[in-house]
Length: 212
Image (cartoon, rainbow, N blue to C red):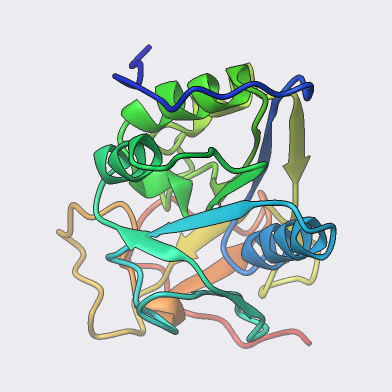
């Protein structure tokens, strides 16, 4: 497991923890992350929030849910930037939030683990499965070492059942069937939430009319 090189001296009576919020696209992961971080802010806790800088779908800096809720965050291009930011702080946060955590490399696992070990409440949100329904990036390891996992589901656009998959569809001209990108950031209309039964592995699936 990757380890952070250095962290500020920090003494806390809190045991520290890692909370994972996961699920498919359109399931409310970011909304739940924002809710938890806002409650921490109301409690006057020191909160840092990070997001991948590549995610500019709704805002360059804020994390924004599909329901238009937003919270200020620090955009970074890599897990190393999060580590560097924390190393330069005189005090670590009480709560550390990370959105779209699946976009970071495995170093994020060591950072989250080290922070939790120093009494920080770490809350991460992201896709647990990619568009092929395969485990996504560092999520399996984060799930394994976490104290709490919240699996949120969307609504299947095909049949209305609870949806656990993110279906990449072909109606969007930006979707390239040969694309090696596991997620096309910014192309939210290139995906649909699907249940296990309605999910089809592949990118050539036509979009379906919403049942709602």
